[in-house]
Length: 331
Image 1 (cartoon, rainbow, N blue to C red):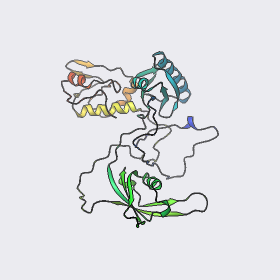
Image 2: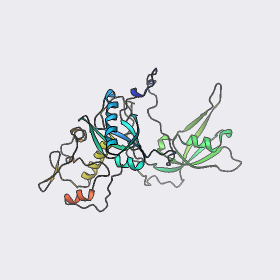
Image 3: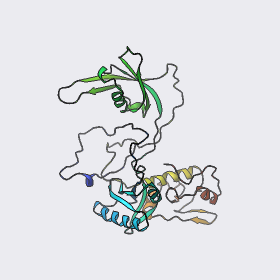
Image 4: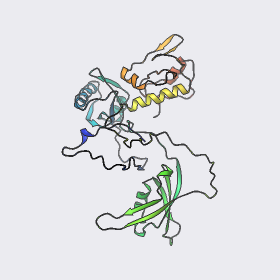
């Protein structure tokens, strides 16, 4: 999933402190949730920065940013500090929010700000469930064989589709059809524990099922690229190299352009074609964060934010053609 630095100190209530826990405790847990979110915050956006802003300067920067937005007619309903950006801003409705997303501002001549949707920040990755499989529970406690507890058990590694007993008289076996996040997340044993004093616990064997005509060489849909758990066991360090969702988008888009041969090899920060040079308005700090280490790579051309790129015009300018193009690039 996503590894990124996150400083929680500004959000810890007075009188409490961060407890890092014991050595070797679990680094990451997965929770399967419904594809239909229960709430709607389409009027919220995150203000990302291209540099790390000190805690003592964040409030002043948010006040100045709100003043500029209100002056331009994008009325800010509320704002608050946020761990993965300068702040979380809410607007009158999603129409106002969508017009703000992708816009760039500069505060105090050194803080570059770009707005992204509230659910497309640095902590988001696009992933898909790789397979739909059957799972078998044996010796599941009889008094807990309800849809509520079956769904709770399945949520540890996937999302429940259906479940049933093989027959009305057979209480020993429960079959569930599940969207599996990763086969490795399915435990070999599930422990159900009663809470509150001297209580009972039950161990439930768990088995992944497949057809007895299964072919080991069947095509398996590869998983989308996600960050692996870090070697040091700290996916969200207090401090680290600063980046943003917009900068990650630009990196992915640059790679896509180069893989498709749209830009030729060259030197420098601008891309030349038949004596013409493309210039893009971008801060030096963003350009430095996006530069490739490999000097043989095609040079970077910093493009506008999502929703402002005309791919057809870019391809035409460089002597190519895009048969399928869009005015926005998917995360």
